[in-house]
Amino acid sequence: METYLHFAVKLAVCAYVLYRVWVILFNERIFSLWNRIPVRPPKGTPEPVIMVVSAKENPDVVGKTTIVYLEDPELAAKVPAHSEKLEPTDFIGEEPDISSDDVESDLSSEAKKPEEILEEKERFEIMDDLAPGLDPDFSTGLTYEEMANAIGVLTVSTDNEKQIIEAAKTIHSIKDTDLFEFFTNQVSNLDNVEKLMSDCLDDNGKPLPIRKSKLELDIFDINKFV
Image 1: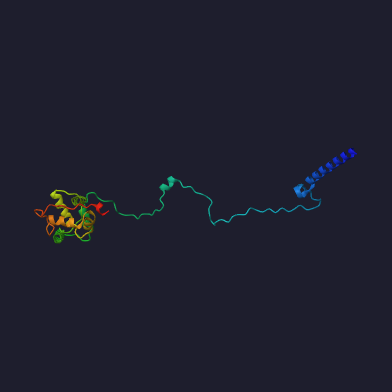
Image 2 (image 1 turned 90 degrees about the vertical axis):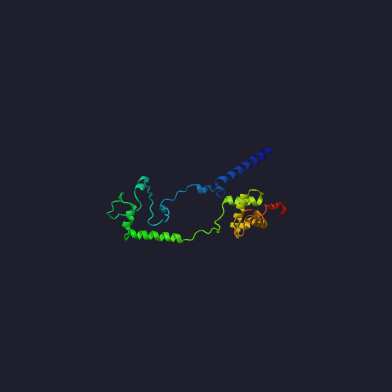
Protein backbone atom coordinates (compact mmCIF):
# COMPACT_ATOMS: atom_id res chain seq x y z
CA MET A 1 0.00 0.00 0.00
CA GLU A 2 2.81 2.38 0.83
CA THR A 3 4.40 1.72 -2.57
CA TYR A 4 1.23 2.79 -4.42
CA LEU A 5 0.92 5.88 -2.30
CA HIS A 6 4.54 6.85 -2.93
CA PHE A 7 4.11 6.31 -6.67
CA ALA A 8 0.93 8.42 -6.74
CA VAL A 9 2.71 11.31 -5.02
CA LYS A 10 5.57 11.21 -7.54
CA LEU A 11 3.13 11.08 -10.43
CA ALA A 12 1.26 14.12 -9.09
CA VAL A 13 4.50 16.06 -8.64
CA CYS A 14 5.62 15.25 -12.19
CA ALA A 15 2.24 16.30 -13.57
CA TYR A 16 2.41 19.62 -11.72
CA VAL A 17 5.97 20.29 -12.96
CA LEU A 18 4.97 19.52 -16.54
CA TYR A 19 1.97 21.83 -16.19
CA ARG A 20 4.16 24.69 -15.01
CA VAL A 21 6.58 24.12 -17.89
CA TRP A 22 3.65 24.15 -20.33
CA VAL A 23 2.41 27.42 -18.91
CA ILE A 24 5.86 29.06 -19.15
CA LEU A 25 6.57 27.90 -22.70
CA PHE A 26 3.18 28.04 -24.43
CA ASN A 27 0.96 30.46 -22.55
CA GLU A 28 1.15 33.65 -24.68
CA ARG A 29 -0.83 35.67 -22.18
CA ILE A 30 2.14 35.67 -19.86
CA PHE A 31 5.25 36.04 -22.08
CA SER A 32 3.80 36.26 -25.63
CA LEU A 33 6.35 33.71 -26.83
CA TRP A 34 4.26 32.65 -29.83
CA ASN A 35 4.19 36.23 -31.19
CA ARG A 36 7.99 36.32 -31.23
CA ILE A 37 8.32 33.22 -33.41
CA PRO A 38 8.48 34.27 -37.11
CA VAL A 39 5.68 32.74 -39.16
CA ARG A 40 6.35 31.90 -42.79
CA PRO A 41 3.69 33.16 -45.16
CA PRO A 42 1.94 30.50 -47.25
CA LYS A 43 3.10 29.92 -50.82
CA GLY A 44 1.51 32.07 -53.52
CA THR A 45 0.81 35.14 -51.34
CA PRO A 46 2.08 38.46 -52.78
CA GLU A 47 4.91 40.24 -51.03
CA PRO A 48 3.86 43.21 -48.89
CA VAL A 49 4.41 46.67 -50.34
CA ILE A 50 6.84 48.74 -48.25
CA MET A 51 6.14 52.49 -48.25
CA VAL A 52 9.27 54.62 -48.18
CA VAL A 53 8.66 57.94 -46.40
CA SER A 54 11.29 60.63 -46.79
CA ALA A 55 12.38 62.68 -43.80
CA LYS A 56 10.33 65.81 -43.17
CA GLU A 57 12.13 68.93 -44.31
CA ASN A 58 11.87 72.02 -42.19
CA PRO A 59 10.88 75.12 -44.17
CA ASP A 60 13.63 77.73 -44.36
CA VAL A 61 13.83 81.41 -45.23
CA VAL A 62 13.75 82.04 -48.96
CA GLY A 63 17.13 83.16 -50.21
CA LYS A 64 18.96 82.43 -46.98
CA THR A 65 22.54 81.41 -47.57
CA THR A 66 24.20 78.61 -45.72
CA ILE A 67 27.73 79.70 -46.58
CA VAL A 68 29.78 81.61 -44.01
CA TYR A 69 32.35 84.04 -45.42
CA LEU A 70 35.31 84.90 -43.22
CA GLU A 71 36.83 88.27 -44.02
CA ASP A 72 40.55 88.75 -44.10
CA PRO A 73 41.39 91.31 -41.36
CA GLU A 74 44.33 92.71 -43.33
CA LEU A 75 42.21 93.16 -46.46
CA ALA A 76 39.35 94.72 -44.49
CA ALA A 77 41.73 97.31 -43.03
CA LYS A 78 42.96 98.36 -46.48
CA VAL A 79 39.66 98.42 -48.39
CA PRO A 80 37.52 101.48 -47.46
CA ALA A 81 33.88 100.96 -46.63
CA HIS A 82 32.74 103.88 -48.75
CA SER A 83 34.75 105.98 -51.18
CA GLU A 84 33.89 108.72 -53.61
CA LYS A 85 35.88 110.05 -56.46
CA LEU A 86 37.23 113.52 -55.72
CA GLU A 87 36.79 116.24 -58.24
CA PRO A 88 39.99 117.66 -59.75
CA THR A 89 41.12 121.01 -58.34
CA ASP A 90 43.82 123.57 -59.03
CA PHE A 91 44.77 124.00 -55.35
CA ILE A 92 48.53 123.48 -55.00
CA GLY A 93 48.83 124.14 -51.28
CA GLU A 94 49.53 127.12 -49.06
CA GLU A 95 52.67 129.14 -49.65
CA PRO A 96 54.71 129.52 -46.45
CA ASP A 97 55.84 133.06 -47.33
CA ILE A 98 52.32 134.54 -47.20
CA SER A 99 51.56 136.17 -43.85
CA SER A 100 48.23 135.86 -42.09
CA ASP A 101 47.49 139.57 -42.54
CA ASP A 102 47.81 139.28 -46.31
CA VAL A 103 45.51 136.27 -46.36
CA GLU A 104 42.81 138.07 -44.39
CA SER A 105 42.96 141.14 -46.63
CA ASP A 106 42.87 138.99 -49.78
CA LEU A 107 39.91 136.93 -48.59
CA SER A 108 37.82 139.91 -47.55
CA SER A 109 35.26 141.11 -50.03
CA GLU A 110 36.49 144.70 -49.84
CA ALA A 111 40.03 145.57 -48.76
CA LYS A 112 39.99 148.15 -45.99
CA LYS A 113 42.09 151.24 -46.21
CA PRO A 114 44.51 152.18 -43.40
CA GLU A 115 42.29 155.13 -42.49
CA GLU A 116 39.31 152.83 -42.02
CA ILE A 117 41.35 150.50 -39.83
CA LEU A 118 42.42 153.39 -37.59
CA GLU A 119 38.85 154.62 -37.30
CA GLU A 120 37.71 151.16 -36.27
CA LYS A 121 40.39 150.94 -33.58
CA GLU A 122 39.42 154.36 -32.24
CA ARG A 123 35.79 153.31 -32.14
CA PHE A 124 36.63 150.27 -30.03
CA GLU A 125 38.75 152.39 -27.69
CA ILE A 126 35.85 154.80 -27.19
CA MET A 127 33.53 151.89 -26.43
CA ASP A 128 36.01 150.57 -23.86
CA ASP A 129 36.09 153.95 -22.15
CA LEU A 130 32.29 154.09 -22.00
CA ALA A 131 32.04 150.61 -20.46
CA PRO A 132 30.97 150.80 -16.80
CA GLY A 133 33.54 149.79 -14.24
CA LEU A 134 33.12 147.30 -11.45
CA ASP A 135 31.03 148.36 -8.49
CA PRO A 136 33.28 148.24 -5.40
CA ASP A 137 30.24 147.65 -3.17
CA PHE A 138 29.13 144.64 -5.18
CA SER A 139 30.10 141.31 -3.63
CA THR A 140 32.13 139.14 -5.97
CA GLY A 141 32.17 136.11 -3.69
CA LEU A 142 34.40 134.91 -0.89
CA THR A 143 37.57 132.92 -0.88
CA TYR A 144 38.21 130.00 1.42
CA GLU A 145 40.69 132.05 3.46
CA GLU A 146 38.16 134.87 4.00
CA MET A 147 35.46 132.48 5.18
CA ALA A 148 37.88 130.60 7.44
CA ASN A 149 39.06 133.87 9.01
CA ALA A 150 35.49 135.09 9.62
CA ILE A 151 34.45 131.78 11.18
CA GLY A 152 37.58 131.73 13.34
CA VAL A 153 36.98 135.26 14.67
CA LEU A 154 33.35 134.46 15.54
CA THR A 155 34.05 131.11 17.19
CA VAL A 156 37.47 131.65 18.82
CA SER A 157 38.44 134.77 20.76
CA THR A 158 41.42 136.54 19.20
CA ASP A 159 43.30 139.83 19.74
CA ASN A 160 44.58 140.16 16.19
CA GLU A 161 43.21 143.51 14.99
CA LYS A 162 43.84 142.76 11.34
CA GLN A 163 41.94 139.46 11.43
CA ILE A 164 39.01 141.07 13.28
CA ILE A 165 38.72 143.95 10.78
CA GLU A 166 38.99 141.59 7.80
CA ALA A 167 36.28 139.38 9.30
CA ALA A 168 33.99 142.39 9.76
CA LYS A 169 34.57 143.51 6.14
CA THR A 170 33.92 139.98 4.90
CA ILE A 171 30.62 139.66 6.75
CA HIS A 172 29.54 143.16 5.66
CA SER A 173 30.17 142.25 1.99
CA ILE A 174 27.75 139.31 2.19
CA LYS A 175 24.99 141.14 4.03
CA ASP A 176 21.44 140.27 2.91
CA THR A 177 22.60 136.96 1.42
CA ASP A 178 22.29 133.30 2.33
CA LEU A 179 25.88 133.26 3.58
CA PHE A 180 25.03 136.02 6.05
CA GLU A 181 22.23 133.86 7.44
CA PHE A 182 24.71 131.00 7.68
CA PHE A 183 27.00 133.12 9.88
CA THR A 184 24.14 134.40 12.06
CA ASN A 185 22.36 131.06 12.51
CA GLN A 186 25.00 128.32 12.46
CA VAL A 187 28.42 129.91 13.08
CA SER A 188 27.33 132.46 15.68
CA ASN A 189 24.25 134.58 16.43
CA LEU A 190 22.93 137.85 15.06
CA ASP A 191 23.97 139.90 18.12
CA ASN A 192 27.63 138.89 17.85
CA VAL A 193 27.72 139.56 14.10
CA GLU A 194 26.15 143.01 14.42
CA LYS A 195 28.44 143.85 17.35
CA LEU A 196 31.49 142.88 15.30
CA MET A 197 30.48 145.09 12.36
CA SER A 198 29.44 148.07 14.52
CA ASP A 199 32.73 148.04 16.48
CA CYS A 200 34.97 147.78 13.41
CA LEU A 201 33.10 149.45 10.52
CA ASP A 202 31.18 152.64 9.89
CA ASP A 203 27.77 152.90 8.25
CA ASN A 204 29.31 152.61 4.76
CA GLY A 205 31.30 149.47 5.62
CA LYS A 206 34.65 151.28 5.87
CA PRO A 207 37.07 150.31 8.67
CA LEU A 208 37.14 152.70 11.64
CA PRO A 209 40.51 154.20 12.62
CA ILE A 210 39.97 153.04 16.19
CA ARG A 211 37.63 150.34 17.34
CA LYS A 212 34.80 151.45 19.57
CA SER A 213 35.36 148.73 22.18
CA LYS A 214 37.26 145.55 22.70
CA LEU A 215 35.61 142.67 20.93
CA GLU A 216 34.16 140.27 23.46
CA LEU A 217 31.94 137.79 21.67
CA ASP A 218 29.77 135.20 23.31
CA ILE A 219 31.19 131.85 22.26
CA PHE A 220 28.46 129.71 20.78
CA ASP A 221 28.19 126.48 22.77
CA ILE A 222 25.83 123.93 21.28
CA ASN A 223 25.85 121.89 24.50
CA LYS A 224 23.65 124.55 26.10
CA PHE A 225 20.84 123.75 23.70
CA VAL A 226 21.11 119.95 23.77
